[in-house]
Each structure stands twice: as C-alpha cells, then as structure tokens.
Length: 70
Image (cartoon, rainbow, N blue to C red; front, side, top):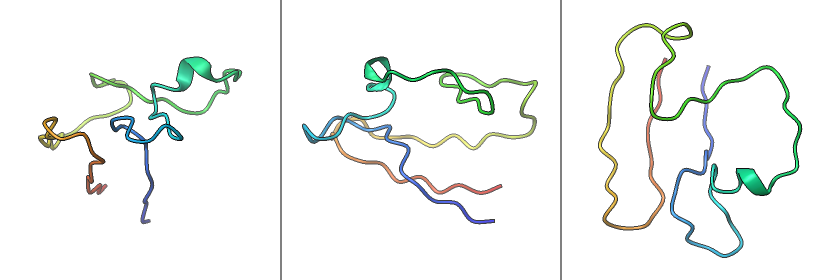
C-alpha cells in the first residue's frame, strides 16, 4: 500500500508547532501497546535487510522530504 504523512522531525519553525519528539514530555498520555519507534539504531529482532541511509542537511532549518518504500 501507499503511505504518506508528516512525522515532525524538523526544527521548530513556528511557535504554534512543536516537532515530535520535542513535544513528548509535555504530553499527558498513557502507554498504549502496539508500536515501536526507534531513533538512533536498529532493533534486529524487528527488522532485517538493507537500510538505505540518506543525508539530511542541517545547515538550513526547514522541513525534510524523504521517500519511503517497502
């Protein structure tokens, strides 16, 4: 299937928008089972195969576009 969305890994460009995961500590939410989001590594019990790494420029605060496939 196709997927699209805005995950929010960006610089805080607007005072009305706090990028994820920057806003997580301010949320009053309970843990709900059913998902995993790993930053900075690979959980080899959940994934196998090649990873296509892409450079993300950090010189200009902006939003980034990344194509996904799978």
